[in-house]
Figure 1 (cartoon, rainbow over the protein chains, first blue to last red):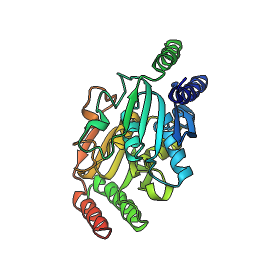
Figure 2: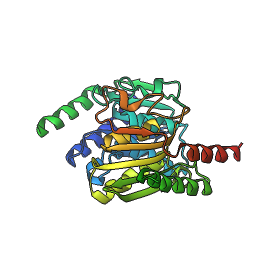
Figure 3: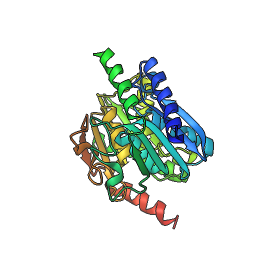
Figure 4: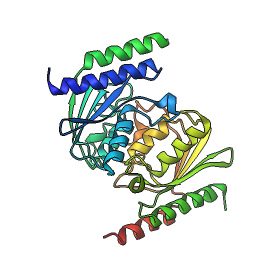
Length: 149
Length: 149
């Protein structure tokens, strides 16, 4: 099992915990030099905060821990393709690499929709690796929304 | 003086206060039924948080006050064209109307770059009114960056 799978497994654990709390099951982890610096799952409902996506929470926590607005030597693992808000924040925070699980045709902002990293105005484009843990991530989301409809 | 100018004047006051704190001078106000619910200026440096733009701070505060992720009857006044992160959050929060001052050719996400509200994936497009208080907003930004270079 590669290190990438291990970190994504942690993100998937956060996604499962989010589902258990009634939140959309998405989880994220920030890694620096092989160490996990922050982990989170979605908390938009709990916090009444539309910006409390897993990616935003780990970026904000890592920035707080580092006392810096920028995280140029950090990698982000997230179970779902980031939305435009999160992709733009990843860019603002100068995250080095983004590994994500399932694509999000409905609300994704990396490979579809506004394609945040592909515009000339994008000040920083991280390396992006998709499809890690895709099956498990997609299944979590399917199960979650199946029980809600 | 119209009500729009009055609200934008409050946003400009927040922008001036932000400059005084060494932050990029952008300010925002959220209005519901003619009442100001939240006001803020940028605090990215102070909070070491790349997401602490004026718009994000007022949206999060208004959501907290309303215990809701959505603000469908609220209007946002902001001195500068929202960036892609803020525009996507405005959409997620279902803000009704956005009034902004100066355009932002470098980092804007409404009328340029990823044009967040103009994609089929955009789940909510607010009414957008640009150019209110544009001169003062642009002057504040010019003065701020002139003293930094």
